[in-house]
Image (tube, rainbow, N blue to C red; front, side, top):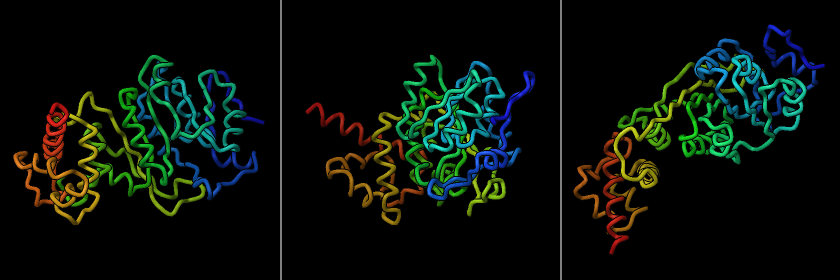
Length: 292
């Protein structure tokens, strides 16, 4: 039987109890590791800063343990889950909750902008992202950032470190540069492997992304910026000149001569403003070529 909360108490689910009751175990093929640490739950929920007027989209709701804690804030929670057993638990445990909505679908196919329009507000997005699809999910969230008020995600610590790496340092990478151009990023907390059942082989981190009202530095074309950053880091050991010339034509490369960035440098040495300078020069060249 599903757990029942008293009229005065919110329903808070426990992963160990749910696994026992439904005769389930974590599926390696789905990369399932269930969070059981209350401090981590609190850090995630507190970072969302929810009120009853908020609509939360939870990616990978699983057994509904985080879902139940999000619902306890009185926010509306749209749980996105596609694994059949998890969906059955969610329906049985939380289906009677008035602010709970289950979407049984692949998160990669979720139309975030349409959900925001449907609810007439910017959404809060939260979830524990599977490592193998965390990068495409993050870029999906960035593309929909105008529809998102806040993004709180748990990632493998290695991936979180990439998001947080400072542009212009040896740890800089394409993912972090692209995210930091459009979001303020900070680490909420570390989550050790012992916080999960079963324990994974890696540690995790909770990361907060706050979409910026505009880009972190002035920029003419964000799409060109993405192409520049990916090219610059695509062959890390090559100079910018060699890395970019593998992607951009000779006439476009010639437009970089006066942008103020030394093309003998490598991508990890560039700050955001310098990537923007390269991008803007290429954008201007593109615009001028289009008018000829």
